[in-house]
Length: 194
Image (cartoon, rainbow, N blue to C red; front, side, top):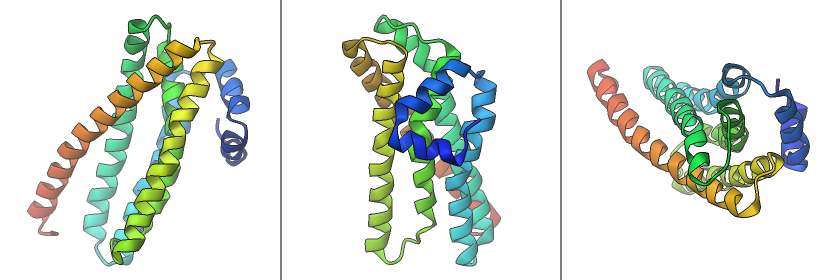
């Protein structure tokens, strides 16, 4: 469904890709399998590669799986809640549209996950890589806003819904990050890997 050339189009002319994908109206399952899962694997693979290169394969496997489940869980929870948030501001968003818009908005975040291959040492390089990942992820806000515009949502409601979805995603991600972080560390302790 989404190809490398589509990713380039997403950064050059997002309305073109968003419009094309909106016309197709893929099912939530299709969006998860063809967009979300492959792109969420980018960060997972980067985490696994970093751990493998440093000789900590067991740690890499646990953190990689945790990263993948965290990313997909936060995405699915946000996409599932988006129609309800839309109703609160008077915007009709179907479940299929919510899954597609959420996936499009998270594409920069998932691609920026490649920067997680950078080790924590030296610290300055680590800060640079994580800061760059956050900045790249911020482009997703614009993509969500542009997607809502493509749906014909008025500017005031578009801004409100973009803000609500962003706050919800960050809250869900933070809560799941704590849960998966603690669980991963307990698992690694039980495996004797930490």
